[in-house]
Image 1 (cartoon, rainbow, N blue to C red):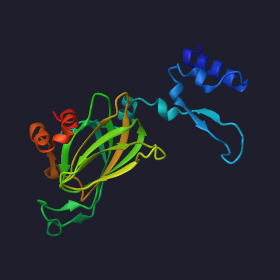
Image 2 (image 1 turned 90 degrees about the vertical axis):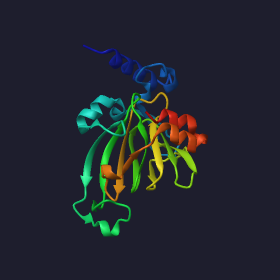
Image 3 (image 1 turned 135 degrees about the horizontal axis):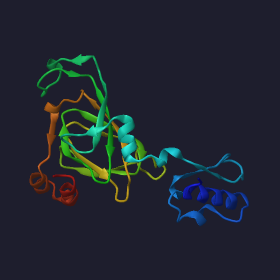
Image 4 (image 1 turned 120 degrees about the vertical axis):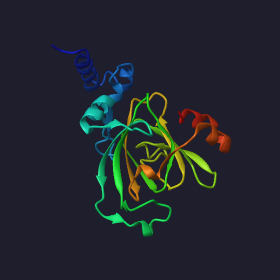
Length: 222
């Protein structure tokens, strides 16, 4: 049986190939956002084409199942550890740490509309990598009191970033931008992550200390 979406795609393709319609004529269709525009030869006048992007049809639940993500017990969101270095750094070379740590660790991390990464800080540096989905707003408050909201997404032409480093000791929290369905990220921590190096932010204390970020701190604390 032909589904509604399959019928819509057939109608769209017929219209585009006959040149009677443009892609804007299909903006109201539920799957229109799943199309990707390709310019076969940017140096020529050849017309662009539209292809179906199956990755964008993934749901947050499917990503959770495929990557075996679990709720993060302290931060929120969903995660799974993918790497923990066997090489250990001894406590003697790690001032402020309570023991030895692996050189580095890495996780997948998923944000959804009903979850967020609560304000917290780590002893080590954390590198964010944006993989799939919708824009993520990351609030970073540095040890000197300065701060900014970084937008993580693949739109580097628009001045956004697919990668960002949060220095150890900085407060951070993140959420999907309003209207987003999900965002799949990766993070790498060095020295490697340990819950003894993780501190959750307290709402009232952070809002009092950093009033310029009061509204976002409120949204990113529990």
